[in-house]
Each structure stands twice: as C-alpha cells, then as structure tokens.
Length: 310
Length: 310
Figure 1 (tube, one colour):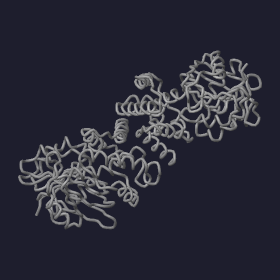
Figure 2 (cartoon, rainbow over the protein chains, first blue to last red; figure 1 turned 180 degrees about the vertical axis):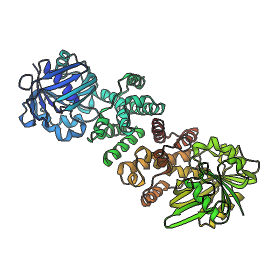
Figure 3 (tube, rainbow over the protein chains, first blue to last red; figure 1 turned 180 degrees about the horizontal axis):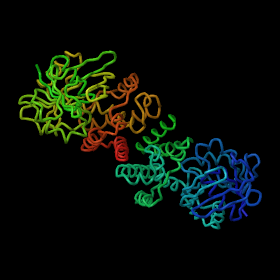
Figure 4 (cartoon, rainbow over the protein chains, first blue to last red; figure 1 turned 45 degrees about the vertical axis):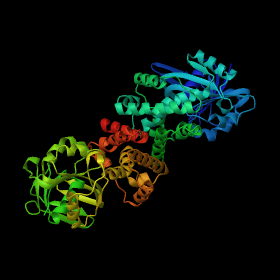
C-alpha cells in the first residue's frame, strides 16, 4: 500500500487525494484551515458523493511538522506558494520515494529538486481537471480529471517513467482516474500552456468564462493568435508540438461545459494569480532561444496590473 | 468672415465651434438632440465660461437639410459615424471651400474626399484636447486644446498647407487656440496613434485612467511596448517618427491631469468604440508593408469582444 502526503488540499489536491484515500491508499492531507481535523472530507461529482473519514480512511494535519515521511508527496499548491512550500514538501519524501508537482506553469521543478533526498524521484503532473474547494473539507468535481505525469530530469531532458509515477498511476486506476505517462515533461508543460496562456489570462482580463470567449469571433481569433505564439515558443525551446494542437484544443473547448479557469477563480477570490509560473517563466524560456512572445507578455503585463490594483 | 458648419457637436466640435462663434465667425452647429435650438451654447473651462446665442452669434440646426453651404465644414463625429455622415457633410462645402476631419484614427479621409465638390480642400485635423459634452448645449473643457492640421492629398502624399486650413488657423488664433500646420498628414496621424493606441484601448480594457496606467510598472511597460510597435508600423508605412517620441509622450502623460481617454468615455457611456479607425485601419496599413502589429491586434480583438458583449 502506497503512503501519500497531499500538500495543498484545494480543488486539485482534494480530488486526487480523496480518490486515493477512498480506494485504500494511506493519505495524509495538509489542511491548514481545517476547523476540525476529524471532520470527514467530501468530494461531490455530479450525483455521486465520496466521503473519507480521518482516523479511518486518511489523516488530516494542520501543520507539516506532524506529517510523516511518505512514499509519494503530492504538491498541489498554487505556483505562487512554491518558494514557501518546496523545502518542507521535499523533507516529507522518504528515501527512495518521490514528489509529484501537480501544477500548471513551467520551470518550477528545479526548486523542488533542490529540497529532495538523493535518489528520490521528482515528477511533474498536469491535471486536466475542473474542480474546486467549497469549504476546507468539501470539494466539488465539475468535469474531467485525467492526469499527465512526466519524470523530471535536469534541464528537462526527456526520461523514462519511474516507479513513483507508475505507482501513482496504478493507485489512481483503482479510482478510475485516467493517467497518461509521458517521457517528455517539458513538451507536456508547453502543451498545457497552449491552452492555459490564452484561457486563464483572458478569462480574467475580459471577465469571461470559456463559453463567452469561444462565442465571439474577436476573442476566438485572439485565442488562436496566442496559441500560435505558444506553439512557436515551444518549438524554439526544442519541443515541436503536434500539428493542429491549437485547433483541436479550440474544438474541445467549444464542447466544454462553461468553465471559469483557475486564474479567474483566483482573481475573483482575491488570491494571487500564477502570472510568474504561467507567463513570465514561459516568456523567459522562449527568450533564451530568441523567440519573442509579445502577446503573452502583453497579457502578463495586463494581469500584473490587475493583480496590483486589486 | 469665414462661415463654418460643425457636424458632430460633441466635446471636440463644441469646443472649436464655440471658440469660432464667440470670436466672430459665422457658425452653423448641427445638434440633432437640441431640445430648444434657440438655447445658448455654453463652454466652461476652469473658472471661465463662454456663451454663444443662436440667432445672434451662431445658428443651431437639428437636421443637415436646413444647413447652408459654408466655407469650412468641421466634421467632429466619431469615426464610427463616418459612413453615415460623409456624403451629407461633403454636400455642405461651398465650391472652393473645404472640409476638416477632426478625428482620431487613420485612413478615413478618402471616404470624405469622394463626397466633396471638385477643387475643394480636404484637411485632416488632430485635436490634442480633453473636453466633453455634458448636455446637448453645454461643453466642458478639461485641458489642452491645440489642433494639428494637414491637407489630405491622394495616397496621403505630403502636401503644402492650403487656404482653408490657414483660414481656420487664423480664425482660431483670435480665440487663442494654438494650431500647427503640417505638410505630412499621414505622419501626424501615425504620431497621434502612438499615444491613442495604448491609452485608449488600455483605459477600457483595464478600466483605468491615465494616472493609474502610468502609476504601475507593468502597464507602463505594456504601453511602451505598444508605442514601439506603432512607431515601427509607421516606419514600415514610410513615416519615420521623431526619435524618443514615445519617451516624450510617456513623460508628458505622467504630468497630465488624470484623464479618461475618449474611448473610455465612449465605452462607459455605452457608445460604439472607434476600434475600426484607430486599430484595424492602422493594422491594415502596416500589414500592406509587411509589418505585423500583434499587440495592437490583441488590443483590438479584446476591445471588439468587450464592445459586442456589452
């Protein structure tokens, strides 16, 4: 039986952690705001509800200090908290274990790599998931749930799947959560940015959900331009993404339930936005190869303005 | 004594028209929404107020049909009304007279040229003016007022000043309104776009006045990037603007009274925005010379989205 720690028990960490706990894995949740650490954790999804009971199915901790070392640490905090969280999260990895960084953005793995024990496995995870937390112990799954995992090696060299990510995939399979294992984490991160860069930023800037953004010719054109810019930046960074990726994403988004991306939820709730990890880091990587991202820069600047003003 | 018609008696047309009328020119104002065409027109500026009395100092018309032909037609409608206004405005130009298009944007002169009598003079005008109308007969001057005039020749060929624009300059001089006569209207239009493209669009997109936009590092950087893009587009279109123009404009704006650009006033009041004349036409001209304007295009798309949604 695998032991897990979940650092960042929000919409993402709550979803995967509860699915692991309800199917028999040992899960330690960090919930700093937990009113009563013995209260059950609830995950609603359509007309289904799962509940896991601390003391029986899982453990809830208010502080990292009380958490044990585990096989796999799932980090699902916002990228804005990485500096604050990385060392403590790494210290929970047992020798030979691993850490999975379930986060959007690009370029944050090295910070975590520095805090982990020698020989442990660092994995980047990309959640294709619409979910949110509506109280410290209650989580709502809206749609999707698939996870893409790729092992991190220095400089984002492509590398074969490791035992930790295979174990997580096996454990999640028992909860019927689909997991894809990839060799090229950097390509996966760029690929997700093709969607995240336009939709997260524009949802904030234009105060619009996916349906409004897809329903207007001007914003569709703007999204397509941004996607093309990210695809070109990825190519400059050595990752040629699949042809027609942008078209496919647009077509898929048009069929989605109307959806507020995570950055819009963050902005509306007064939380910091992941502008650094999702925008500035991508622009910086592309710039190293001489590729400009003027549209992405513009969006980042506008978001920074909005974040500061608020 | 010069006779004038003012088509579009808003913040701009009201300001120049009242200054002409109060200093002895014969001015026919078109005010479709005039409650009582005999009510005085008032212009407030700081602690000064000027009033011109229809029947004595000027004439107010509710329809073009009652307006006489005049020496100079001042068109100060929004660019969004050009299609609707151009032919009627041209028909008011007496043989040997002229029409002055007091408008932002670029590329609208040919539409007016087509509706004017042979041998008449078409002039482009750029108002550096902060003013607005607060009732159909009452106008508020906030700051500035200088006018730049350049004669239009086919294809925006540079061309010497004509008698109509000199006459307007002389008449405005009596009201102490500064006028600059330039030979290169296209350069003047591009130069004004260097300010208008960033500040008009961003004031709407970020719901901010000039002081907020100048007071934040991210938005200042975004404005500078947009200005550089417009300067490069102008160069591609054959108009090399003065070095340091953008810097000078930024420095000047930092000293301005907090100011909501005209597009923000339009958006907030539910009026159409001049996206076509101020953005699309510039992008189209630059594109003819192979220059891309990705940031400007992005702003235009975002504004179009906002205009449609509202």
